[in-house]
Length: 124
Image (tube, rainbow, N blue to C red; front, top):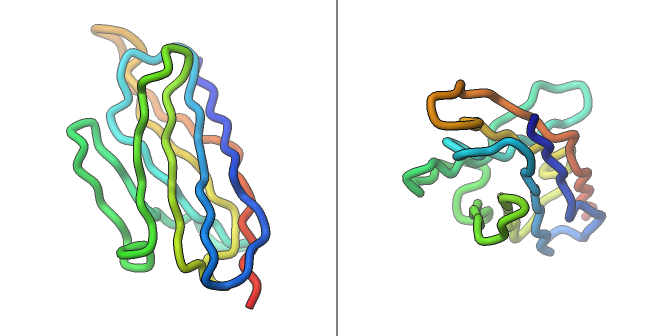
């Protein structure tokens, strides 16, 4: 199994910054892609950013120029996926969820995991 724990959410004023973190631990041989999603109450989850195993990244239009997704696998106990968010706007308010696609061992299967999310509130 793989556990994802997000942190770093909070309440900030428009224009301020937050950095979200997602700690992935458990049976992980390699993470293929790691993504952050945004969900507003009553709405579908929307992809914000993805960093792939080859270190390439994609951002949705709302995130370009303001958000940055990074991966840090230096700690032997967990893998870290972060989302640095700058110049936050009220429309960025919502729950941010971490998603990873994981290979649990050599010759194993690719599996998808979601975190429970961390809340971000941006007020004007």
